[in-house]
Amino acid sequence: QVNCQSISDFSDKDGELLKGLEKNIASIRLSGTKISDKSLKWISGLPNLSKLYLDNTLITDEGIALLKNTTELRYLNLVGTSITEKGLSALSSLPLLKSVYLYQSEVKIEDMAEIQQRMPKVYFDIGGYKIDTLKMEVRTDEK
Image 1 (cartoon, rainbow, N blue to C red):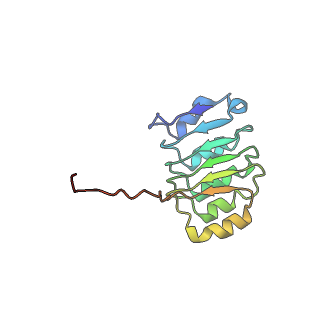
Image 2 (cartoon, one colour; image 1 turned 90 degrees about the horizontal axis):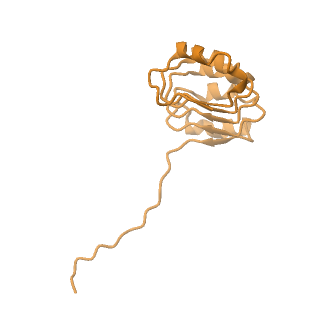
Image 3 (cartoon, rainbow, N blue to C red; image 1 turned 60 degrees about the vertical axis):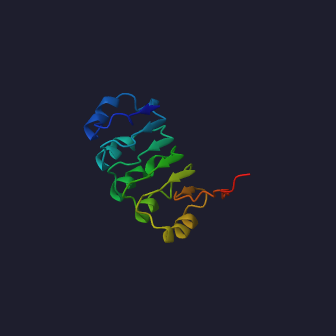
């Protein structure tokens, strides 16, 4: 597992630091880093990658299409990215993909039915939860 989340300056050129570890990386967290589509070229070459956190990065639909050959990928976090329905369609051939997180991405809720139909085995989390709250009765009379 590689976690670069706390390295806010981690960018495309820093992927070089992971050379030689490609076969050993099963999970990589790049949340909130400065990586872009350029990094998805080397990420797509990680043969055992099963979890990928790209939330709040600069990736686009064009770059996400590079992941179409990451056949071990099961979890993908795209929260806060510019990914749209078009980008997701490039991932429909991933055989093991189970969970995709899309809150605050550019995927429109009205496109979700079509996306879900195209990728029926995938759980899509679009966030925006509404939490039920209990009404509290405030009493002002003192006894």
